[in-house]
Length: 173
Ligand SMILES: Cc1cc2nc3c(=O)[nH]c(=O)nc-3n(C[C@H](O)[C@H](O)[C@H](O)COP(=O)(O)O)c2cc1C
Image 1 (cartoon, helix red, strand yellow):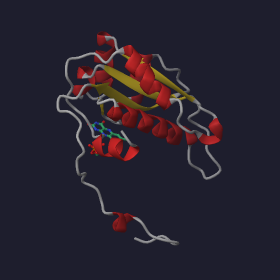
Image 2: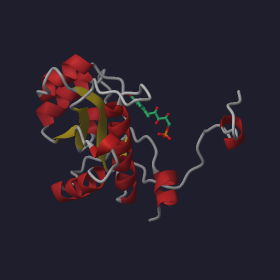
Image 3: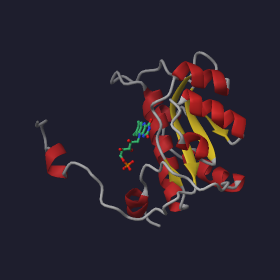
Image 4: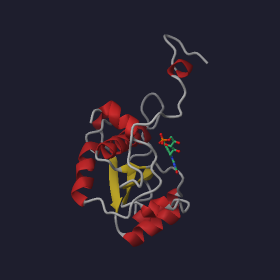
């Protein structure tokens, strides 16, 4: 599958089959994740893969009880271990780095026919507590992953047209 196809197949999956994703497959996906670029190649990140049902239940509670979080075969937490560091442009690199890495995850998963959904609606402190993440780190995203109930197909997406969001040479509203 080429990148374009993975981009078009990926969608927010909120309904999963009751079927386990083999650990080897998750490891393969994490291999694509670790290839993501990061600012100064610092790779200040850690990932926790939650497969244990009781742990998943706790993550689901920390994620505003979004039911599909516990229905997924696994939930992967992307954690920045240097949340304070800002690039000279003023933007915190940890959030950017983790977002790229987690996007690699979603696209590689799509290539494998697996569904994912970004989860930003979660309680940071509760989730850190559940996953035993040190206080000074931050969870950037939670990502449930599993076999989607409806298989991934290329779909048109509800997105603004390029002409509405792209300008050349100077900014334009
Ligand atoms: C940073 C981020 C946080 C999100 N948080 C949630 C969430 O907590 N729960 C949820 O159901 N979807 C969440 N989403 C999924 C978006 O609603 C979804 O990606 C968007 O509507 C576009 O749909 P698509 O992913 O199917 O293309 C999140 C997406 C992003 C990128």
